[in-house]
Image (cartoon, rainbow, N blue to C red; front, top):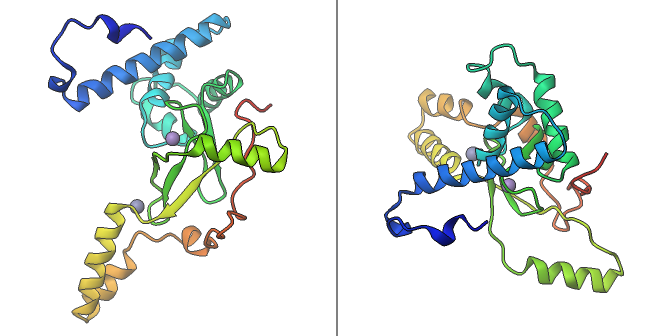
Length: 216
Ligand code: ZN
Ligand code: MN
């Protein structure tokens, strides 16, 4: 994009990070709309709203979460419409689908290419992670195995800062003893699904098999 090459305005540092974030979302939204209309897809206001949520969400929402986000504006939009838009984006390779046995499929419409994620086993938050050397690692794996590598999936599991703080508070309450501590522990962020999930194996054996982004 050449948009920033002729920016005459104030230096980038003076823009708040929220401004930058909003501009990035608008840019990505424009890209998605352009890509779908190039392919002759109808761009309805509902569809723009769905694309905006997918373009802007750092949180890797589920289809249900996208649906809930647009319902206040478009109360008649069905979940099927959300899925249809997601399928179009998948066919165009413009969205990354992350499958989880614990909390279903989650979507990244902002970075449609494979990239590492950090996943909270407490609350299910999914955050992008920066990892250097992935290109080199992929090259080496291709060389060693003779595979033509098409995609990869790299998930790191742990506790997010919010859940760590909650656990620490619950532990402190527990250490003081009494029923207050037990209550805090019981109200913790654990869900049965997450508690029953086996810890990821050292070799990544419990990970879902990666699929090409534009499968189907
Ligand atoms: Zn968490
Ligand atoms: Mn992501």
